[in-house]
Structure formats: C-alpha cells, structure tokens
Length: 551
Ligand code: ATP
Ligand code: MG
Ligand code: MG
Image (cartoon, rainbow, N blue to C red; front, side, top):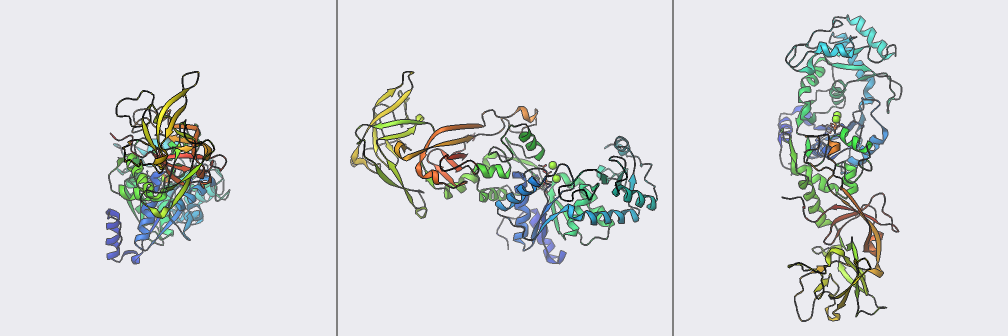
C-alpha cells in the first residue's frame, strides 16, 4: 500500500484495481508540448503522474505532445527531459512523441471518414466561426457536411498531398452543431500547415488537432489513466467520442485535477515566454522564474519541490497557493541538508588593534549545528576582519545588540571583541571599526562567564575571497499578475540586487556549481550553476532564513 496521502485520483485507481480493470495496469503519461520550458505547475503534474505509476507498480510515459509545428523547438525538448530527470523521475524506455504517430493518426482519420463520422469542410475560418453559433445559440450545419465518403477521402488525401494552401480545407468530426458543449460542434481534427516540424521535418503538411491526437496517442500507448487539468473537462466528451467511434487498441479514461497557481508569479508558458522575449528576465532559467530550471538555478532542491507538490495535493477545485508554502518546503529541506558557512555581503573592515599583525590562527567550525556527520572546516582568523556593515552602528537605538562604540560582541566561534573607535573617510563614511579582543575568549566565550548578547558572522581579510552575490525578490508586485492590469506593468523593479564586493570564506571558492549553503544569518545560497568559478565565485540567494513576507 502506498505511503503517500490519498486523493480522489488514488481512490479511482484503487477502485479500478479492485475491479480488475485494465488487467491491473496503471499507465499514466506526462504530455508536455515542447513550446517552452516547464514550470512549477508542470512539476505538480510530473509528481502526480510519475508518483501514481511508482506507487501502483505501473509506468509513466514522457510524451512530447508535438502537434504544433512552428512553436516547437528541440531546445525545449532537451530542457524538458533534463527537468524531469532533475526532479527525480525516470521514464525508462517510455519516451514518445505524438508526432511518431502521425501515420497512424492519419489512418484513424481515414477510418472516421469511412464511417461517415468526419468530413472535409471548406468554409473560411471566418465562416466557420459564424456557423459555430454561440453559447446561447445553436450552430448551423456546414454546407460541406454532407459530402460523400468518397469525396471526403479524396479531398483528405489531396490535403496530405500538398495540393491545397493553408486555410482552404479542414477535416472536422461530424457530431452535433446544436450541442450545448461547443467542443462537440463538429470540431476540427486536422488542419493544413505548410510548416516544417521539429521531429518529422517536411514529411507532413497536415497536422492533427490536440483533441484528436491526444486520446488516440493515449490509446496507442495503452495509457489507462489520462490525467489533465480542469480546463479539459469540457473536452472529455470529445475525448470519449473519438475513442468510441474507432477501432482502438485500448480504451483510456481522462480525469481532471486542479492546476497549480502560485501568487506573485505566473504559471503559463505563454506569459513566461513573454518575460523572456521582452528581456524582463535573463532567460527561461533566470532564478526569478517559476520554471523548473529557474528554481533549480535559484538553489531549490528537487526534494523540496516534490515535497511541495505532495503537500498541496490534488483536488477538483482551483485555488492559489501562497509562494511562502513553496519557500517553506525549501527552508525545511535546506535547514537539514545545507552546510553552514560565513559570507559578508556588505563588508566593513574591523581591525583588532591588540592582535599581532603577523599572526594567524584557524578555528575548527562545525558545518552543521545539529549534524556532526557533516563534519567541520578550518576557518582562518587574523587582525583584519570583515563584518556586515549593518552589524555596526555608531549611534545605536536601544535594544541593538550588535557592535557599537564601547560594546562587546562575539565573533562567531572566534573571540569576543569590543569596539574602541571608528575610522572615517573624508566623506564621513566608515573606513574601519577599531576593536580590541579578549585573548582569553578563544572559541567565543569569556572565561569569567560574562554575558555577551550579539554574535556576528565574519571573515578574515587574509583568508577570504571576493564574491558576487545575487539577491532575489518576487518578480511581481501584486498577488495575481495580469488580473487587474497587463502583467508586464506589474513587474517588481527591484527583484534582482547584485552585490559584487562580498567577502566569503576561502573554502567557498571550491564549491561545485549548484552546491547549497546556509550563509549564517543571511539565508540559503547556492553556487550559480553557470557563472560560478573558483576565481570568480558567484552565489545566488535561494531563500532568506525567515519568511519576510509573512503577515
Ligand atoms: P501552459 O498553460 O503553461 O502553457 P500547458 O498545459 O499548455 O501549460 P503542456 O505542455 O501542454 O502545457 O502541459 C503538460 C502537462 O502539464 C499537461 O498535462 C498539463 O495539464 C500540465 N500542466 C500545465 N500547467 C499546469 C499547472 N499549472 N498545474 C498543473 N498541471 C499543469
Ligand atoms: Mg497543452
Ligand atoms: Mg497552454
């Protein structure tokens, strides 16, 4: 029995298994169209489909739903494969393309025509719309609806044979122009497109519509449970109608679930593509993007995304999930998994007057406060230290426990230091903070047990490296981008802050790309997958330590 929580889809599957349906098989599929990068909404569908197959001993196919030449690209095909694998799922042998079925789909179309269930319609697009009717008004039969089977077969063959320009003929199902469901009013099955296809090249100039290709592809692959989002509920009668007319190898069933929406972002490939094309972001994998590759580059662990998809669950009502829920999954994962390190993002120099100039020493600091198995590292210390500029105030308000003139603080794991003086530049800004240290406080505690409230992170000037750190904030200023205005006018202008003069522990230069850390007191960070190099370290802030957006 599966360990994961139950939901209505599991209930359906368990009922089917109990009744011996589909010979006890559970075959699902994840069917992306390769017209963009996958986003967090797709992650929900991936976790759901691959998760069901895993838990019921079935299999999940990765199928490229590539029936729209022109919009599709091998770049997208590759990114989709990479993202599914990175999320932790494996389609094994079961990688398919709807376009691999073009010949068989064509044969199914011929079968429909032969059965008098489809016809070639030669109305213009504009007339098609008029004949279709409206939600409150029945449609009108096309004047081409009663073409003979022979004429339809001939025209359809000639459509394939490149005899006609685009838009002159389409193949339509012959169903019911008065149906209250618009999808059933003689929907289009095939259209002419004189376009090259990324998988089939110039082999075809007619291409099947989604509704025709999808259910038949499911059948050809012996899919049992074809799971899609709720907006396809209206298409289900057509899905069933097509399969019921034809002599198909298997009879899949469609089930719908609620799509994932997250606030302060968009989960629509079309909108994400607009962001890329308008240079609002640096690309599909910009760490501010809700794409899988963007979240990956941001430092989100795949296990955190899987955990999130599980927690939000599936239902049949649409809702919007708070971005904080996703970020909390990431915090929880990284709190346990990420080694600690020290990095000073906005450095100010601290000089320890009474520490010998030529001396250095090394402190053994634990990589994780709760997990000794993660080991320790040596962190160098010397007379000149960098601390965070905001950790010093010349004239502090009450309850400020960090450094200020006369005040003593702890340098994490090293010594207690007391501020004696401040050196200023000619423009009045701080050049250096002058301190003395208590040599008896090695390791960070005073032998006399005096209380020191503030603990600061630090790096030694002689033992650190310069790094670039990228801080990210939400991409949009409003909860529901696009709802009240054009989403492009609701971009958060300060969603990216690049700090180029950060000081990090030297060991961090050796971090491999994508390695994740907690920078003490600052948040979780990862070495940038593409830009990080030992002599040019670049870290992305994945998430802050606390939810700064919580109300
Ligand atoms: P988009 O609307 O972003 O373009 P799509 O549905 O057109 O997405 P597909 O490539 O067709 O993109 O999606 C592949 C699968 O992912 C489909 O089964 C679809 O239902 C599912 N999916 C897409 N978006 C979401 C979402 N936000 N939540 C859950 N599942 C989704
Ligand atoms: Mg789609
Ligand atoms: Mg879409």
